[in-house]
Length: 262
Image 1 (cartoon, helix red, strand yellow):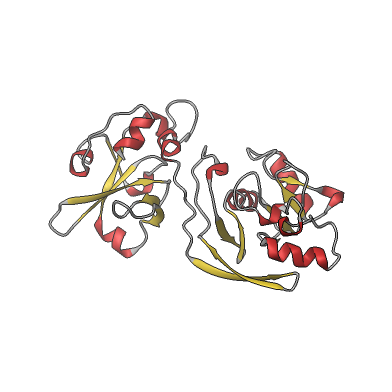
Image 2 (cartoon, one colour):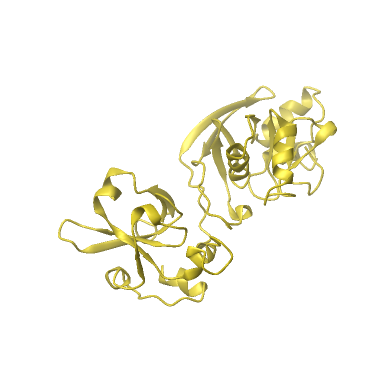
């Protein structure tokens, strides 16, 4: 955590039991992205620290060498050991005039997509078992294009950077659902051989591949219902230009318009 704050130009103590004595105390219901959250054992010793994503979600690196992941203060273990929060940066609280810009959170740039669950998909007669992570919670100002890997959205695999955009749209009135997200190049080949169009020529057949086969920005694509409504919401949002409707060319399709492939 000291390294993350240093990247944002903020100096904090090095060890956890000193960090909790510094900064401004913050109770659980007022936590904002970038605040530090502390945990103590039954003796009162503060043994662990995480970084809040706002609300009950926080970035947690359990031990040196383990993957960073997203946990919740609602989980019984963390709820029982929660020792309070600390705020070290006015910008986090919105006093800088930029709102919750999560300056420290951006310095961490966590890969919030931690593979865990396996989903089974079948396209073009080809079945794949795809490992995905949970839908990431991202703070205001977080650059979703930094998210890598696949996550679960509407019980389907989708590129991690796209999922928070769909969630944002849903929270702002989109009534549709995800029909299709990620599919492998083998599945794309099956679709192409079936004669379905539009369908990009897969890499395995000498083509450029489909955006649907991508996991990391700018690759990645989704097919949805209520596409017009989704397009209207995104066109007025902070995600304008990132995830764009194909329109008449492919009515349910959204992707980043970087190469025109579907």
